[in-house]
Length: 348
Image (tube, rainbow, N blue to C red; front, side, top):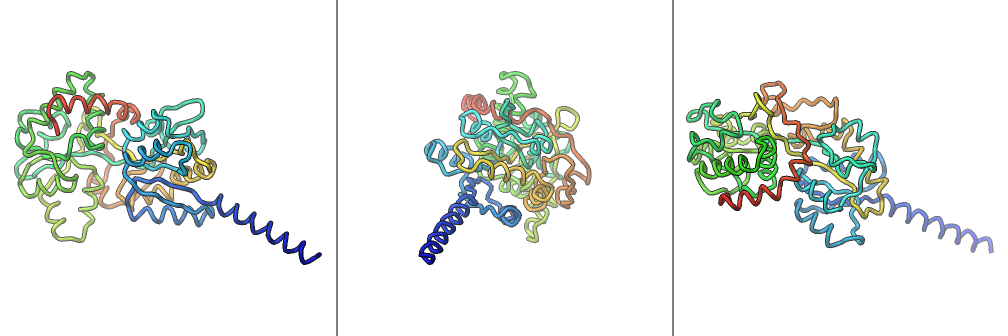
């Protein structure tokens, strides 16, 4: 009888441990495809005992999957890499608002989703600037030191850029439209950029940088982390490219350079929301913020975090730059009308 009782206790204990182990898994849907992020996940697991089960896709794929899965979705945490997609996930009701004093104290208001009584739907953890790259021998810096000049006739036939409909460009264009103050001005500017293209939009940001160095065009637009990768590269070809191009952080005398953001949210139907919030809070910690900076050449968003990334320092001449301060949720809200403008002016 005593043996049976002990066996029963062992069975109950094993079941409890199994349930506890099940609770210690956090399902992450991530659009961040950076190998350096692996340290973020493993360190979180070491600190908390919560294992990360990751599903990789792009921003659009993740949002589509959340919609199709509905209440049956296993997702707990969502990581996206664009303000417009974060905003779309928020307005589509795919995220659960989070109320966290730690996150509110660490992350400035312009890097969060729309505030509600229940908290913000998403928080930004790293930024990248969208800057101008130019041929140092053929282009004067002062002719490309604002976004407006990308659409100026003086740069006709000089510009190359990835697809106007790519999220990075939609966010940039949405920000410029907000600063210009009217849809008519924004559409005229987009038509000017389109008319200044040296070739049809194609490729990614790295392709645009290389095209400037190769003489296919003289002016391009790129996210800073692509530039930083090439500056830190041990490949002689990458170094040769970077010796030929200059870098401008636009609009330093006006509204500042456009920033895009990578951010996180708790999935609306998370089965483990407390652990999900804990993970978001971890991403705001100085340790995690430094991984963003040194691992993927992004700027941290958390207040008071200092980083020492030589490539980021080189781009800004070891100093700060003026960044725009409009809420990124506003930039995301402009996405639909910007796409309509692109269609009207024939910007592919």
